[in-house]
Length: 487
Image 1 (cartoon, rainbow, N blue to C red):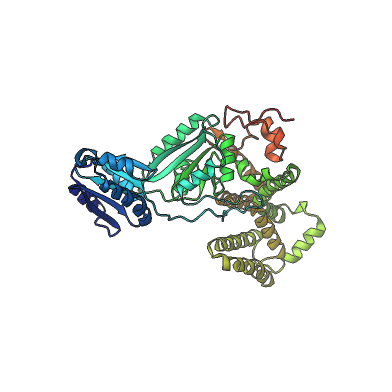
Image 2: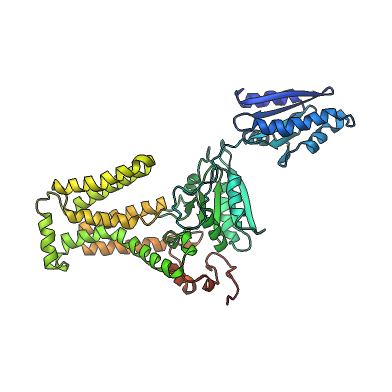
């Protein structure tokens, strides 16, 4: 739809489009018998900004006698308004988008073009420390709901002209700005095109958070494990860009998406590269060990106590039997009951305010567990197994990854309950086959282990010194050289 040359008609059309909303402000001004008007939405625009640059520019224009009002007024306004973000709009839909985004629209009677100048109000919180990812050592800033701020946090770290951003508008009603970011001479351009095409196919009323985009881009995957990383940390995003990965930023969301997210990525942290390699190597090995233990420990305990008691030393078996005496429930039911209670407590801890969340955790973990043992509902060893399993799972911060661990933990429990060690082995084989069959953007989920990439395998399980990390992962980029010879 084109914009009319009749100023009054344009004003009426816009008022009608917004249902005469009370926050739509209009002011008409006459300059030597020529009518101009400006409109803005008070809820998303700053009155101070409009008064400072717009009225000042118009006042100066009124004082000038050299301009031809009927031919030069539009150009004079365009050239004298003090605003760095000024554009000329000819399309009506684009005009409404600008107006809803906090721009002020200036109409001149007799022209079918509109001058739009940015006058956004500050509706966002400032840059703060990440609330979902603890930072021990490293930059303390995190993404916010302001899209331009998020881009700036990346630009200030990567001052390279090859850092490219592509904007898309997704959502018929929200028209949310979604940005694809990558380093042009490192990233795989085929993957960029694949993502761009997938994003363009999204047809929905609105995008309110990056979680919407994550769901659409991974809707065909049936796995519980995530295939992209969601993070508030700009340093993690920049490190991933330098590796050849692609990022997605969504307007009004403080979480950036990193693609692809591989299994190895969820076992590493950005802080691994801010500390001494020898110390981080031990930490990484603990993470890998905890990942296996948090999944199989409950199933293993059920298998050895229910089906395969011959593998337990006699002294320990007698001790377990004594603890088990008086407990009316089978071992599997005890374990499922306590794990379920713990997951409920953890979910409550996540949802409750910080001031009360900690007290709930303490009450649940100490009093409830002790009461269950004293009441003879569960045996003491079950509390130890559940605590060990749960603590091992606390090493990971990504919510989707934690939920994936939860699902597989229950799968191992069910198979072990039915078939003992045989069931545990079957569940483990199914787990290995499943994660090895996963891929995203034609990249296997389990690289560099399967398929094997010997050059980068070492840094996956331990932390090697930066001077030896000369190449990027070949499955992410064709530009593998990270650094020249270091002496």
